[in-house]
Length: 204
Image (tube, rainbow, N blue to C red; front, top):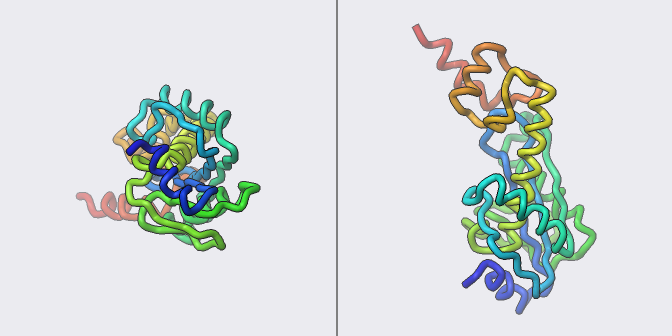
């Protein structure tokens, strides 16, 4: 079954299918992004897949095609302050909620990647590894990932010492080296760094 056919199966019962996914739960810095996408039943985009399985160049090309061909789409985010206040899982759910609710269309069902769903008025269904099964979820994963990468490139201009354009805020060796040298900045998730600094303090 293709990703488009997967969504077609849901359309037999729920004519308007919305897919939602997030990007950026794991990084040490930056906002978490989410997107929601609704396609017309006859829309098929070749090459669409889980964003993590695609090159950055391919994602960017698909981003343009998705935003052009989707009936509705929205990209939203939850800020670092929100992540620190309500935790990353709840912030990812909040970003997805914002994306779905921002779409000016009453979805019959919202397919959410993973095993958790946001709390809102829509009928929802969690789809484990949904970004590799559903075209609308895969499209949402691509929009969220590309938007977040662009955001981190903007943050790299604001905080050039951390080289965010290279690691996008993830916990790479380079990122930790920059943290050791400069300490955290305003967009670092301090709750994510707590264990790292605790370990460092324990070193001889």
